[in-house]
Image 1 (cartoon, rainbow, N blue to C red):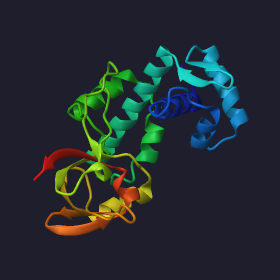
Image 2: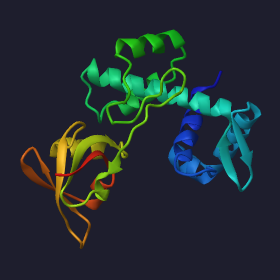
Image 3: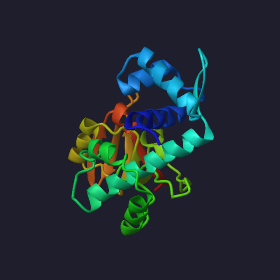
Amino acid sequence: MQSYTEENYLKTIYHLAEQTTNVQTNAIAEQMQTKPASVTDMIKKLADKGLVDYIKYQGVTLTETGRNTAIDIVRKHRLWEVFLVDKLNFKWDEVHDVAEELEHIKSVELIERLDEFLGFPKADPHGDPIPDKNGRFAKTQFIKLIELKIGDSGTITGVSQHSSAFLKHLEKLGLTLGKQIEVSDVTDFDGSVEIMLSGKQINISREVAKHILISSNGKN
């Protein structure tokens, strides 16, 4: 049984490991908003429990047990986000912090019933895949909006930036999951992208475009 703090560390390491093989303690400290020395102490505790492997100066990797534990936490977090949006009418920019609290509930039976109650969803409100009870993720194929060429079209299927400010910005522009878009122009100078959305032209920055995930339809 892990503490809330230990679970948060495992989840953070899991997400960082999606970007790099060996996760550095400084990267963990930055994500957890704590001191590197505190991270090192926690990593040693997790290593003693067989949840991570740690070699000084070479970084941290999750053991199989640690990875399975992290995936279970991710699953609970994303299921609770679906529940909050679909059943309690939260907006997609409001659910993360609440789900951060709910993800630590230990009851396996509750989570299995929650999954069934929600209809076994495959993705959370931000488009992130939800693993099943065996830790398997449904295969998803998407590209970043910034990678589309002029004339390409597709459906918004997710976002890779989950900050409340970013999600509110997308909501204001109407760029929410399931919306169809088509790239009409790309500015060479700053990489900003002009898209068609519901018959309207919208200009978005390169920074925004690189965090919007698209299921591409190709060229129209």
